[in-house]
Amino acid sequence: YNFGQLLSFSSSFYSLSATPADPPADEPVHDEYYELRKALKAAARDDNTVILAILNEAWAEPNSIFDVFLESFRIGDDIARLLNHLLVIAVDDKAYLRCQALVRHCYFFKSNRSTELAHEATFMTPTYLEIIWERLDFLRIILT
Image 1 (spheres, rainbow, N blue to C red):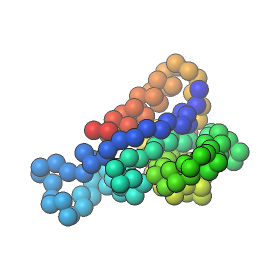
Image 2 (image 1 turned 90 degrees about the vertical axis):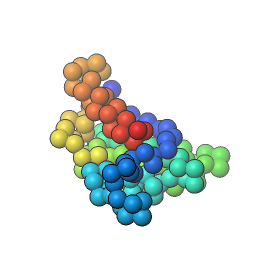
Image 3 (image 1 turned 30 degrees about the horizontal axis):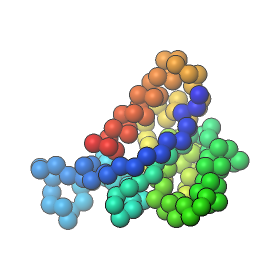
Image 4 (image 1 turned 45 degrees about the vertical axis):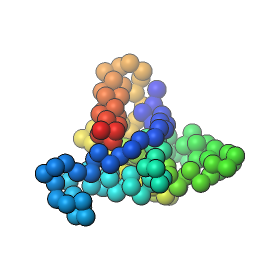
């Protein structure tokens, strides 16, 4: 199994934006999620729907499954426009660079474990489970 498995879903993301103690809505909050909020807002449709895909080094190689994923939007029946609402979450440097070359909206998920996240992990090993939990925790941040 590879951490780069593509995951797509929709979410409203404004819950990341403010708490009662934060500055007024017209002033941006520059916290650890500022860049994530900017990326989500840039990729969002009018109804705040965003398509997310998680990408690592292994899936970022040319002619990989990521290229097939992107091509499916281009050749699909009236769905190429959805690429404007795709936000790719890159978990390492190589994935981020590849994302920037191919996709309009990229976010670099910086982690102390980026090296581990970049590579394959055997299904259900401790490393695999830690990677899955880290990914789920990140998605929880987006959804809450």
